[in-house]
Amino acid sequence: MNPVTPGVSASNPPMPLRRRGPRGVQLEEVVEAADALLARGLKPTIERVRQHLGGGSPNTISPLLDEWFVALSARLAGVPTPVEDDLPTELRSAWHHAKHEARTLAHQALQAERLALEEDQAKLRADQTALIAREAQWAGAQAVLKRTLAETHDASEAQRSQLAATQKELADLRRRAAQETDTLREEVAQLRQGNESLRGEHARLTEAHEAAWRQERERLQAREAAHEKRFLVDVDRARQSVKALEADMAKEKKRRVQLEDASGAERASLGAALQEARGVERELRKELQAQAVVLSRAQVNCQALDEKIGAIGRALAEERIAHRAARTALAQALAAVGQRIGKRPPKRGAGAG
Image 1 (cartoon, rainbow, N blue to C red):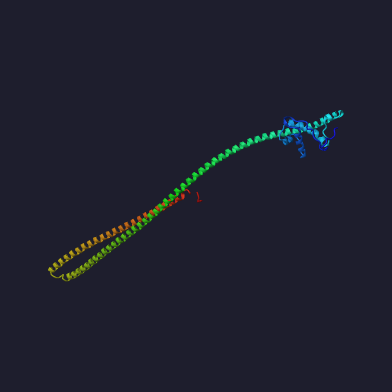
Image 2 (image 1 turned 45 degrees about the vertical axis):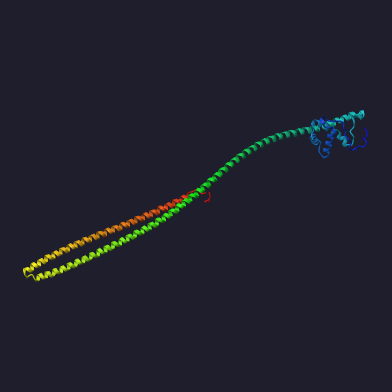
């Protein structure tokens, strides 16, 4: 064996840097990357070397990493990597055998790493496929969500427009209801004013009718009292006349009895006086009959007056009935106005507002 190269530590012999891999990846770069990974406590693998180098083909890195593994045992033992040309002839076969064994072990380790890498790549491809499917699903869901949001926005805008129209219609209804309420209030005020006018007019007419009825009744009562008084005076006068006549007749009869035995001239005179008395009696009877006619007329007038008073009373009763009917109609009109006001839609809050 050759001695250690001067200036190089025996514990860290230099690696033979005689080869360059294809596609630009150099052996010293792979060695440096593997040493760096090993210094960090990581097992140098093809993928980790590629990540450390920032690229490179696994087929290029694999044989270079095999050579690093072959030289690693000698480097760890502090033995410099032997050069095949410097070995004795009897050791070359042993060196080839050790090199073959090291390569075999390294190849097996690399194969295992390659299989693990292929599994990782397959898993990565499956994950990528799942991710693509998930992204497609997410894109579909996002499209559905966007479409739903658009539909929701359109529906919201439609509802807002409908709400604005409804609010405008409600405002119009409230304004019309307020106008109708004011109109109804004015109508009610006019009806009340008309009712007060009707009541005043009715009271005035009733008072006038009652005053006229009282005056007519007083006039008729005075007339009836005057007729009755005059009739009583006439009757009393007639009675007095009859009494006087009866007294005269009694006197005459007494006198006739006394003078019965008188002369015929006196009898004739008495007969004439008797005839005259009978004429006076007839006149008195006629006067009594006339007084009876006057009394009958007075009774007829009293009856007519009673009928007139009854007619006035019936007219007053009819006016009272008409007044009650007017009050009932006015109350019904007020109730109908109240119902119309109560049945109008709210301007939504009375029983709410």
